[in-house]
Amino acid sequence: MVCVNCGYITIGRIKCPKCGGELKEIEELEGKVIASWKLNVTPEGQEESYYLNFVDLGKGFVICKSKEKLEGKVRVRKNECERIL
Image 1: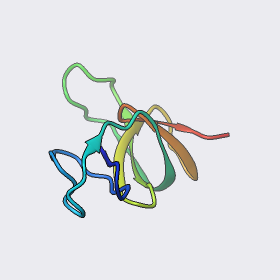
Image 2: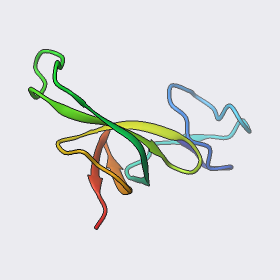
Image 3: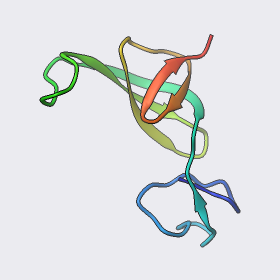
Image 4: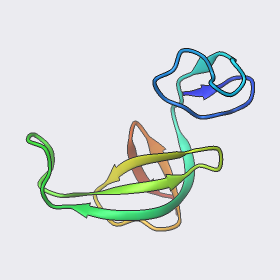
């Protein structure tokens, strides 16, 4: 979720913790991968292995998953990352 007033990114809140503004859902974000690691033991019902990526959005951080190791700029949609070409 992102604050419509100040742009602060947060999750699990009703109001922005920074300025008290209204929050709206985010469809797509862009950022830079800080770290990427491969999970070989995954929860039941998930792929056999995948990567988790720690992404700096500039105004916050997110963790998203991908099928390949990512570096540099990425696009985040619904908790999944893809490389920006």
